[in-house]
View (cartoon, rainbow, N blue to C red):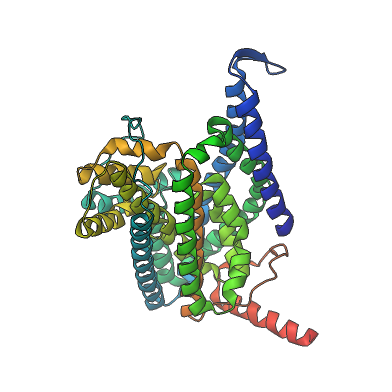
Length: 454
């Protein structure tokens, strides 16, 4: 199933490019009645809206899964972790990794944009004050306050990952503290996690159609020619992302050794989904499933991935530093190394506060430009190709979080025996997702079976 789904997703991407190109070049705007729907309007816009509908249905279904999946996995994971010191140790190591990865990502963005200087010579005459969303001043104290939910149900309803994480931490620790009296709730959360994984399998069957719609819409609206206009910026940014991938995977390889290559193979589907839809949320359920197969216990991934999606957006942070200096170069504003370092630190802090904001990177860039007196209208220079850049940075976020989760698991000595990448994920017993002892016993049984076969 996995291999077929990967093939279908790639086929959907190719067909999406072709269909979008056909609509962009051969369908002229004009009012018609679309049969058999009886819809009167612009035919070209009808096709664009139809493409968009496919991807929006998929994203809505994914958003339906995210909140209960995160809640159940974190609660069950912490409740079964037992030792609160282990939770504190994992959290400390995770934050240390995230800070180091953030510094590497933003610093590499600054180095690469100063090396390539893609903004030098760019025509800024068309960079009017185009609407990119409200410019938000990102205050540190507001961010801290925003972390803590006023209402758990509101956090779940709005898919606020950071607030869900905080509530789940409290709930998991409380269930662990009350012992036997909390077992019914733990079993219920465990069953909820299993149900959400089963639902994820159903939703993922629609992924190739969603990928087709997402790609077709972008190409139908902008055409392939927009890439030629910005070919230098796109090429240099993606080259920088490749360098970041090499760095992250190399650091991961120091811990995982040869298993780093198998990790890459396991996460190829979440990568394709994240790249084609430009949505980290869309890839999250599949990433949970693939890390299960790789051998990461759910009590670790259930804690690490939601935390990473708020604090470890490597691709987004690199993009923000790259884009900010690109705009300064385009307006011929010379920034000293000291000023760039201050911007780097500002981006590192402010990027943590808007994880759930649509086009969050643009919001952070706009706020940073305003904060340092740089031309805010320069955001219009990258707005036209932001979708293409967003695809790359979203896929990079998936890579960064997959490596971080696997490394922390290995660091804790909890990385289990992996399952074959091409098999269907078997239905685990309720303890298989959450119970650490059961998970280790299952791994030991797998090893014994293999030895017996040998």
